[in-house]
Amino acid sequence: MDWFAAPDYWLSRLLVQRMLAGLYLIGFLATAAQFRALIGADGMLPVPRFTGRVPFRQSPGLFHLHYSDRFFAAVAWTGAAVAAALVAGLGDAVPLWASPLPWAVLWVLYLSIVNVGQTWYSFGWESLLLEAGFLAAFLGNADTAPPALVLWLMRWLVFRVEFGAGLIKIRGDSCWRDLTCLRYHHETQPMPGPLSWFFHHLPDPLHRVEVAANHFVQLVVPVCLFLPQPVATYAACLVVATQLWLIASGNFAWLNWLTITLALAAVEPARLGLPVHPRGYPAAPAWYEALVIALTTAVAVLSYWPARNLLSRRQIMNRSFNRLHLVNTYGAFGSINRIRQEVVVEGTDEAVVTAHTVWREYGFKGKPGDVRRLPRQYAPYHLRLDWLMWFAGISPAYARPWFLPFVARLLAGDPATLRLLRHNPFPDAPPTHVRATLHLYRFTDWRELRETGAWWHRTALYEYLPPVDLPALTRAGYRPPLGRRVRSVPLDRLRRPRDGRGHGNGRA
Image (tube, rainbow, N blue to C red; front, side, top):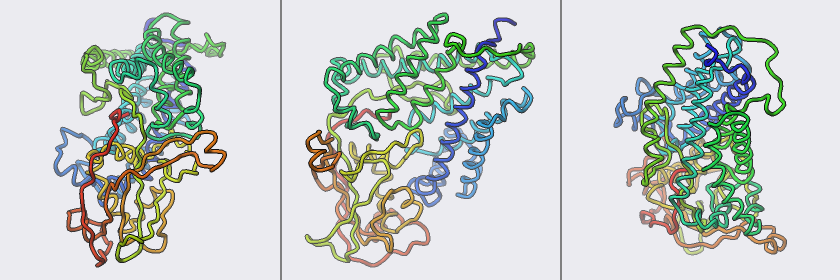
C-alpha cells in the first residue's frame, strides 16, 4: 500500500536505528559498571530487598524470577553485546521477520533493569529509551521501505518530549515567564559541563534570548513536526540544533542525544540535499503491515493518558502510566534553583574525632567538588551517584534511603562503591569516620578565575551529617557490605541531616 511505505526516509531510519542502538549500548555499559554498588545484592538499595516487597505485576522483569549479581551482570553485558551488534548492522543482516527480535531483547533486558532500579533509575530518559526502543522494533530493515506509521509515532514521541517540557516550564517557575531562568540554570543544573562556566557568564540579554528561543522550540516547533514537508524537516533540524546547544551547556545523560535521534525520524533526507535510496523496495508483507497497524492502534489508545496530562493545569512530568513504560509523559526543569548546594563528603583515619581532626575529601567524577577542577563532559554516559548527590544537596529527605548506606560503604572501603568515585583519599585502609557538610557553590567571575585559578567558590553552610563510624551505622540498621569487618572505634552521635534550603525541579 502506497500510504504504508516511506522509501524516501531510508537514511533517516538507518540513522535512528544505529544511533538508538548506540545509546542502548551506553546505557547497558553504564549499568554494568555501576550496578553492584547501587542496586546489587550488597548495594545501597539492593534488588533482592526490592523484589521481596514489590510484586512482579508492579515491576515486571527478569529479576523477579531470579537475582544474583552474576545474573544481573550477564543481563547487562548481553544487552551491551546485542546493542553493539545492532550498531554494526545486525538488524539489516537478518530477514525482515527476525529484525524486531534484537530490539525486543534490548527492551526486555533494559525494562527488567529499570523496574528494579528504584531511585537510581527513576528519571525520564529511562522511560524515553524504553519507549523509543519499542518503536524501533517496528521500523523494519533494509528488506522493506520504512513504515510511515512508525515514523509518525516517533514524531508523536518527540512532540511529547518537547511540548511537555515547554508546558511544564510555562506553568511552573515564574523565571521561565520573565525570561530570567538562565541567569541561574547554567550554574545550578545537576551536573555542569566544561562550557557551563562560560554559558553562565554570557550577557543577560543573551540569557533572555536563550529562554525565549527555548519556548519557541518547545511550544511552537513541535507542532510543525506534523506539517507537510519540508516544514517538518526544518522543524526537526531546529530541535536538533537546540539539543546540541543543551549538550554543549551541561550533562543530561542521553536525554538530548536521544531527542536528536528521534527527531531524525521527521527528516526527509532529500530536503537537505542528501542522497535518495538507489533502488526500490519490494512491497511490505501483509503480516508486517498488520503488525504496524496494531502498534499504531495500541499507541493511540495509550496516548489518552499523556495527552490528558498535557492539557491538565496540574501537569506532571516524567510519568509512566503503565509498568511497561510505553507512551509516557515527559518534561524537565519545571522550576529552577537560584543557588547551588553541594554535599561535601570527607573522612578521617583518626580514632577519636576532635576539633583538630584532619579531614580529607572524597572526589566525585562529575559532581562539583574541588573548586579548581573544571567540570567534565560525561553525557551521554550517566553517572548515577553524582546525579543523585545533586538531589541530596537540595533535600536530605530525598537522599535518606541511600545516603547513609553510601557512607557505610565508604567506611567499609567497599571497592564497588569506591570505583564510582574519582578520588579515594584513603587508598591503604578505610577511614574511621566519615562526615558530610553542606556547601554553597557558585561560579567564580573572570577576575577570580584569573587570580585564583578556581572555577568555583564555595562556602560551608552547616553540618549535613555529623562524624559517624561504622559500628554506629550498623546499630542504626545500615549494614556494611558482606565480608567487611566492623572495627571497634569510638562512636559519635548519629543524627539525621536537616532539610536543606533551596528548591529544585524534581526529576529532570
